[in-house]
Length: 165
Length: 461
Image 1 (cartoon, each protein chain N blue to C red):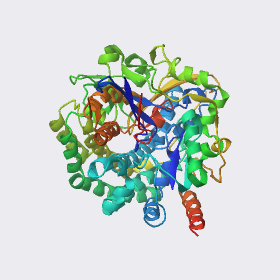
Image 2 (cartoon, helix red, strand yellow; image 1 turned 90 degrees about the vertical axis):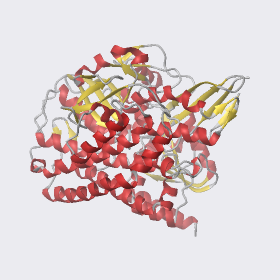
Image 3 (cartoon, chains in turn blue, orange; image 1 turned 90 degrees about the horizontal axis):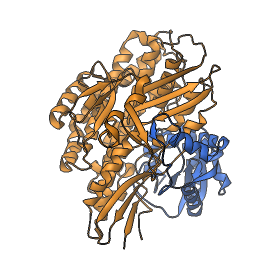
Image 4 (cartoon, each protein chain N blue to C red; image 1 turned 60 degrees about the vertical axis):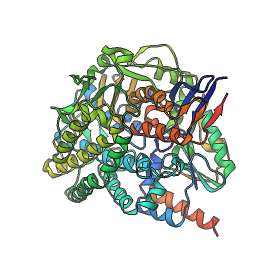
């Protein structure tokens, strides 16, 4: 299994960590976790049975990661409200990216010199923050902000049981 | 021919960071920078939201540390409405915050930073929670248990552990029952024994690691953190600046704009924060565990007070050693557990007097708390109906991204000479310095960018 993080807060990963001892048991008995940047150090992954995508697509880099997750997985799950529906980051769609950047980098009262807005060596923002299913086919959705830990576990276990026959 | 090396993704941090290294014709380092690559824009989506809803939206800045965002927001609104929360509400909010610290610091010490230190003999790309559990199943079991107690405190007071939702203008919407209090108190007492027990088992390994890399990622900076009468404090304290020589200045939260300022950087979604009077260069400051132990003289917890003395005699005051962040983080974990016990032992915590009356009127307020990664500032203005017209958020990782960025060049130079790159060392040392700060890119890139050590590592023209 791989966990791909895009524009996210980390709360879904914390919900997974909150499985606690159940998680340790799953990792020993059922799941081989090959990629999860927040929890481990592997820097890439190849074919996996299940890819869990967490977060909404905020920038161009996020879209690349979503496509990679689709290509590399048999089953793709959108986990959490951001991945399923756009979530809180998609509130941005009410404003447009120029206004978002201006409020963060020009209009904030603590900024002394209003000169540059980040533009080089950082991924460009896309016009609209969209859920994962607007970019690739999603097989299953686990909604919630964050989804309750037992629901994440039951979903993954049921899928793995099916895939592993 | 000029070359560039990109290290991405930097793993085991919360978010996306990229490290970019520029080399000259002979292959020596010209410069290196950390780029935070995420951006979400919470300052904007808060505009037009009602102040009673804001404390529920801002935890989504960060799922790892939602509690301090929730509470800084509630404090900012209380301040702007000039409402004094009841004593019990203050205690419950502070207890919730200590729960967040117990969860977060345990997670970072063992899952995020720990693998570099406890699994130092493994190749960097294999280090992580899974291998840690294979090798130290007993320690991991204890860690999982301690973290769960932290989360249980937040869940009991805040309804859910990730994204608590009970702090409201004027206080808190859920009281603590006597039964829940007794339950939590028992668990906190057991947790305290375990956490204090780590001092002998784990801290020497962290210390040895820090001693082996003296000066790695070294900087001379100022520090900012909260204190309450010279003591460590997470919720009620006032911000104190300690300069490079150790001189202290305290200020009121509502005056923060007179003391700290920010400047934008073209290559990162993180801004540079600095002490206003000292200017961009000399005003660089750090926040988080190292800052907290540097600004505090003492602690009201017995063990954390002893540890604080030991720390100061070993690393000096103010301590500048970057890898000492880990020991400092352990002290803050001990303090959080001790403080949780003190709060739970006080019978006032089960009082039903949990909310002061609130009248909605126009206002402006600043709320500051310690988040696990450092001082967190929320500042809002709203109209007479209570709708937000301006929001400014200064989060710990934004404040620490300037020192992280400033230390990168010296760190990468140790692994690159005349075009020869020692990749294992480069990943290891860059990761060790970045992780010392426990950067949370989600927070910083509410407006943040993160660097990831990893897959997209590539040599480019």
